[in-house]
Amino acid sequence: MIKKDLDIYKNPNIISIAGNISNKQHLLINRYFDMGFVMATADSSVVVHAPIIYRNDSRSQIERDNDYEQDRESFEQNFEKNIKLSKKLDKRIDALEKMFSKIREVYPSFGKDMESKIPSEDYNLYISQQMKFKKSLTVHAEYSDERKRISDKLLERKDKISEAIDSEDATKACRIEDTFLISELEKYFEILRTLPPEEQKSQNERIVPFENSKIGARELAMHVLQDRKQRVEKYDEILKLFSKLNNKKCVRLIGTNSEENYR
Image (cartoon, rainbow, N blue to C red):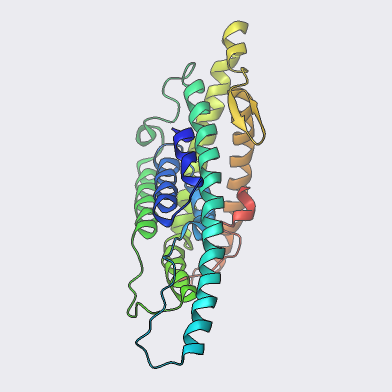
């Protein structure tokens, strides 16, 4: 599947890139419990159409050309980010897909039946925030003026996403997700320790793509486990800030889901 998707980068266009980003985002959220990563990279997922020169307005030719060139530059810079993110999502899906598949050879219900494995209150909060976030990714901002500048259109789309993720409940949902996966990974390691050496060895087979090489499912699982524990620590710090600012209706917390934390 991934190899086929890579064909879109030979002659990338906004339709194929936007479609790939959306598809991979939903896989990460729905199948691999990685909503925190999708939130952290959401700004780079906003795809806008290339600018158009409108000849029938009251501005001078010079003004129209200047605006067009600025919009073209904004579009190209943003599209470069879109392509970079699309490739990053491809790699992440490929690695997680193989890791989950390999882990399920020894722990068949790994990552399954979340509803039965966590408190119902947590599950309901998680699902409600997941739906809210996915809607923000797919619903376009309403443009009252189709001639708005590219930078303004990008800002409107990003603001819609921010409304969904910059909240206490969204942070709690990400913490619930990571705590669940931590529990599942720890159970996997418990099961692994009880298996015969040959079965344990199969989990070390270097078939999972990671950075510029391949590693075993066991090694990547340990990496993911440590990464998720670090995320939970960050979410705990953020939730403490929310508790101090609970009189505020909305708080923009820089770093809540910063892409720098998910490289």
